[in-house]
Amino acid sequence: MIKGKLLWVDDEVELLRSHILFLNEKGYLIDTATNGEDALEMISTNQYDLILLDEMMTGMGGLETLAKIKEINPSIPVVMITKNEEESLMEEAIGSKISDYLLKPIKPNQILLVCKKFLESKEISAQYVSKDYLQDFNEISRRLLDNLDYNDWINLYLKLINWSLELQEHPELELQSTLDDLLREARREFSKFIERNYKSWLSSNEDRPILSTEVIEKSVIPLLREGYNIFFFVIDCMRYDQWLVMEELIRPYFNVSKFSYYSILPTSTPYCRNAIFSGLFPSEIERYFPELWTHTNDDETSHNRYEKDLLEKLIERKRVRLRNELKYIKLIDPEYGRNFEQNIMSLIDTNLVAVVVNYLDMIAHSRSDSVVLKEIAPNEQAYLTLTKSWFTHSSLFKALRNLSNSKKTRIVITTDHGSIRCLHGAKVLGDRDALPNLRYKFGRNLKAEEKQAVYIRNPQEYKLPRRGLAISYIIAKEDYYFVYPTDYSKYLNLYKDTFQHGGISMEEMILPVVTLEPKS
Image (cartoon, rainbow, N blue to C red; front, side, top):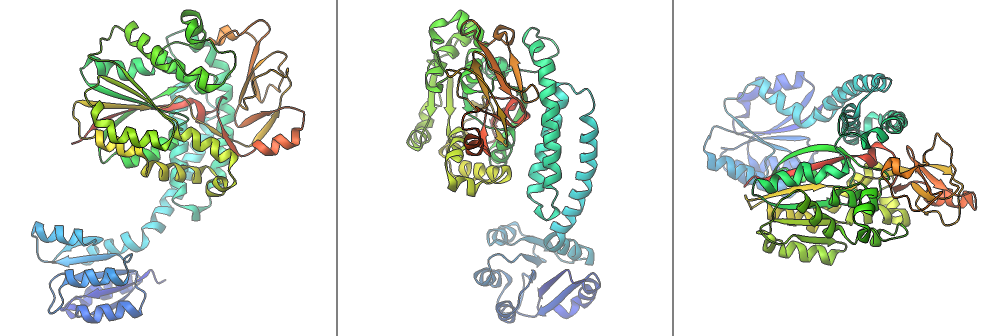
């Protein structure tokens, strides 16, 4: 079986005949050229998968030939072979976009390794990915039957999303549907786990995960006490897998450390983000600071007007003395983002800067309303690609790169909740004035099927605001979304395949807290 076609360019190519025969036996076709001019003519008229290029040749040298090869075909991989070990030559060759670099004398296995790297790596990688995935699939399926604790669920969820990212690189394996089935089963078991354990977490500080109320205490407060200036970013509606694709771009500039926490319920901004900034549960905010919990509905603008006030009270309660006034910034449109990026270095001496970033939440909501965005991001894999594209070109990424030059600065990045792609409708009954959120509701006379939702009769047990007599909450499980019986089919289709939050799922509840230390 032919594995690839190569062009070997060397003015002493006849001395390499044994190497060429060795590669022929391994399934590679080899054409040869003894000078740059002939090589360029052959490249213009033939399709090659890889070029082996001698650096020292009579006439047109290797670097000059390389430059002209890139003019003809910029994407073809070129491996340069040379006797010259000077660092300047290596840098010049790398700057000219060679794909690899070998020093003479070369051995047949060196060339074979290069060929496998550039011509067979995808196939070899796919074979091992398929093998490892099937082993993990069986292990995860078995573990879902065990009595998992909160750490087990974090590890299992991270394994699932890492496989999702891995399989995205190998669509030819056609394993995504099996992973989707496994994710559905995991969501079902996770919902049962939360239903069994969540309430007990709220009444005890032992044997439970870190919750929203402890994010700042565990990440920001210790760094302030060590004397660092802190930029604390809360990226609204950021899933763990979205962070992982962003982290790839971050790593060249920062040393990255992180831990995981569980969002409180409901996984919605008015509850989760206020819990993060206050260090208190919603019922405690309502009790201790009623003036900061004055809203009567769940309009997110009114609910989160007092985040700076809540953070100041938390800092004061933890007895941390800031050297200067706390800064609070909310990035809600591109102009705000550009201004923040351009002026960020003026904040470098501020002891604590809290920044709320709304763009991912806006992307999620925009996708629900936009046919174009649904076409661009028809599934979760494409949604991650959209996330990476946004972050690559975002003012946020540029601002973070600017901060990477300050050794006295530490950056903490987290999110208030994630989101889930809702694919199954759940019929709900309730009074007209019940909250119109698709993943949770509060009001009177609420009813939904138990397998689709958690019913909360006593909000205080979940440390939620009581909101009046006879008020109860329901929170959707797995990937269900609530639809009223009136015009059921219309709204079932309208909201199907949209990213929502507020409910119980790994995607919404298991979240990262990341600390970035500048490398420079």
